[in-house]
Length: 346
Image (cartoon, rainbow, N blue to C red; front, side):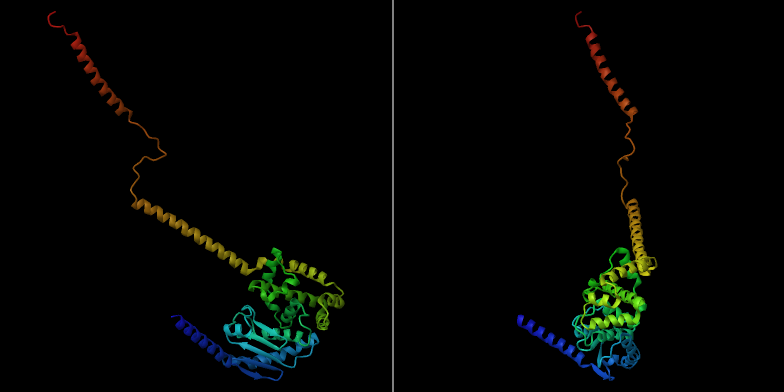
């Protein structure tokens, strides 16, 4: 029996491996010169319009940062969740794309199974910005908040700023530090939304103060190997810690009151109230049903009600006592008569 189970397990494993391999063999690659797209046949219609838009938008991004375009970028579009997990080695499903700067590759999710991920073009440019920022630079020199913030900002994803998440975090005192955002890829979906929103807000704040040239100068300082604590005052004349403190104050000021317009929050509150009201209604209806059932099917209680005092029929008791007294009196009278009767012979 054990041998059969082992043989069945190996057979299923082989079939599963073959299915995975056949899915991998379906990928095709289209080369567009500077860019290449690897995808499955069911997504083949995405390639041409995607690269057309990237060709139009990405050079502008590179000019704004003052960086040369990478020689080659390859985009891989995964067709489903299982392929996303296989190609990205189990990256979180809330991510719309993953960039691998050392290989010049960005992995994306097909819109067919990522319908809420936003436009594919913007996600593609977002991941391409990651590759642009880190191409030819020492590893891990650009902080995560700046990397993600610039990628969102330059990809035109400002309209996805999650102000409601920022409002809740500001109101509850749960704003992340720049150091917290370093662990973005290990967060759950809700915390990741907050990390992305704070990163975009920080870059927008920097851009409002120093413009494209300020962002570009900071990126160049970091790409030369300087850490953020020394590069930041060198470029802006402001200590890194002071900027972070001012930026957090800005978040509390600008977004702290926007929870009044938080549709998601109020819909959730309304749903909770609705569920509670439904629960109370069901409980009261059940109580009325039970009371009606008792009234119709249970026998009436023969014992006197507890709130009514028990009364004694004193007339009946008195009558019984008088009858008892008369009987006793008659007996005594007969005995007395016998005692009063003269004895014979007198």
